[in-house]
Image (cartoon, rainbow, N blue to C red; front, side):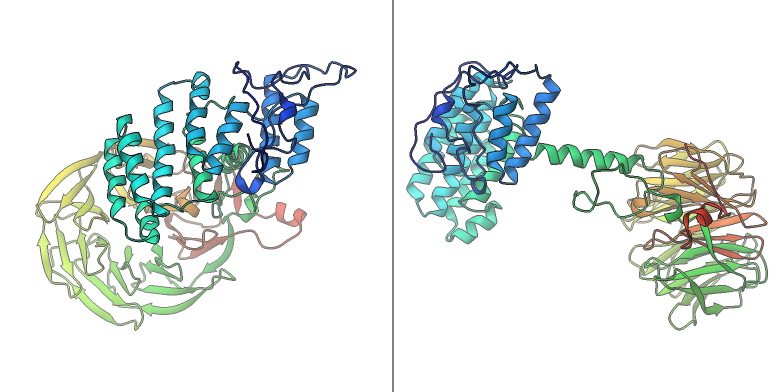
Length: 594
């Protein structure tokens, strides 16, 4: 083999597949013929010598290493090599009596990085005996020949490339569909065109390193022969992700990298960073507050009350404080439901059961664009926007179910459906509706078909759907909060703690990645659960009557609002900046640590 690209003898690989040396004894192959600092520089993705120099006869017999100790040493060695600390790796392998990988694998790696494809193919025959599945040789050879073919094409050697395609790749009788694709690259007139169509980096270190990664990641070679690429970083990243996954209060953006985390301590999020402390109490309503909802861009909050008004609040993203922006008046029966249009330019307000009217407001001007009423006998208590922002559906428990445009013109209707709550699916055609038969059905207004999706044993008072459309959160009379998988149509979890009778209470998903669930309750509290845990992680106190609705800001995960029959809207955020003793004494958030 070649040392760092210069001439040198190629050592014979060991015949046995043993990878590491126990008791500090050195490998039996001719390590003296290998450069102590590896076969290629780190820039070429080469690894240092996998052979330990012959031990001096005076060296004492070292302590026998366990398999896990050897694995750790190899992981550390691979990581240090990636940092370019090759001499340190040599010393580590010499002192431990281990080797980083099988010498045949090292030779194969170097030949791939140097583009010596015939030698790399020959190496595969040596590695065949070390593989779990000898048939993997064919798959590995295919990947090698594909790289060889693409490099010939990039160099303009069309005849040589055609020879590889016809005489080497095709006879493998493997992945003929891919061979057809590769043959199409013969028509590329320029290397840039080839690289773009093949989604390939081009001849050189980058593409060859990627090829090696693919060969390792695909487990063609067992890890005892060649470690998967960047294995230590992978394990550390998995450990960090698992700790985050188990953290009850993790509510920040997930970062898959390791640069912004400490590996020296376990990941723990403090409850003080969680939105369970009262930031502000909004008292501008003069009667029960039945509903509240943050806008899709998180900059505004709308609240609806029995006092016949809707108040729009402006959110300060820095201080997390809200100030009154507009008051929309004239809802004679009160406001029990609100829906922002997808672009937040319009806001629709609905009333309670005996209300036959619906109001569509322009948020920017505060002017009423449409006041819709099909019949005085109607009950329009729920509404949902179509994703196109040009249509909406509305209905109620008296059997009305309409699809309308922005001017309130009736586009479609569905007879005999007693609607409790509505949601438009992202496909723009299907509407989910909970009805008086304790179920949620999907209604397609284009082909006029409907199907059952969720069936409960008690009335569904309200429901909401996750952003990805997969999960539905139901407030079920006398039962509490239930989580359903809409795709598999199964009940996933029943959340404990909340008091739910026959009041309409609106719960919500929240936090980064919607990992949390929050709901009001008839016991005057707000409950928060982690999506995977049935027990609440926090109970928020402060309201003095039933909490009708909770809304989590979709952009600011540390901000939440709740509306109550006590006439207030409470804004919840992280703990204020206090010293540790003062913070521990804060009231308003009762943690249910598990």
